[in-house]
Image (cartoon, rainbow, N blue to C red; front, side):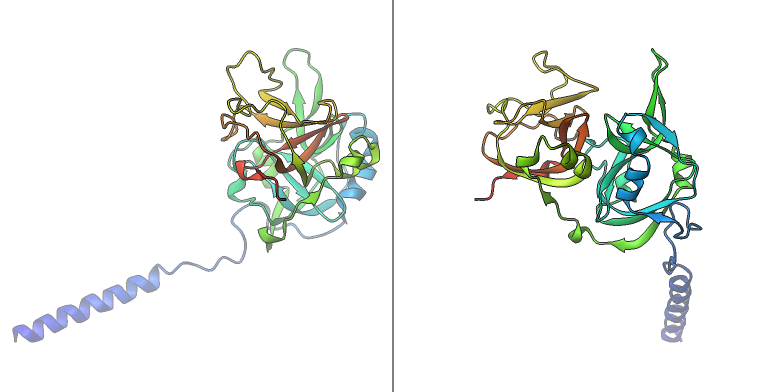
Length: 287
């Protein structure tokens, strides 16, 4: 009798567990739980077409609101995972690249490198920050009142993008930076914002002790909480490695050896600014 009772108890527990398992199965999500899934692809421009369309505001470091119902579709190539790209991420397609700025941290959580994204531009601000193409909102200088393209509100952003199914980080490969065209204005215009690699270079200030972006070293001039490090053999008016003091690797010692440096190659007027995405973007040069 006692044996029969134990069998019944075991059967009851098994039945309960079976019911619980069925109730708590992970639901299949047909759509990502972020962004505006109601968006559909209409009036999609390439990034180059968009830049051509708004060239007059981008090239003069001005800004304007997009009033037409147009979109872009691109792949995320860099995000804020290490803090060096602060409140912004980089996207590119086969024709060009640009930055998107949002007042939100942790963008990398839903915008990993390789994620394809559809952006509806109507109502957003497009412009040039130092002639670097940027999508965002309006920034107003509290001291002077001057306005420029800046970050958009996170709630505005939520209604303007849709995550597409493509997420292939292995396909995001940097292109080789052509040092022979470092002063070529067309090359600068066409390639700024892209993920690229400059090969076999040295950091001029690297001495075995100096770090990328010290926050309390009076010998290092900080501009907007970032340090510009020069590259041996090139004028700092042409190209620099730019690191935020808030980057995870800001206080890492700069390597003194020959390097291959990968990053988002932005521009500030006529100067290339390389933004490392993570510390692994800087590697010993491959012979």
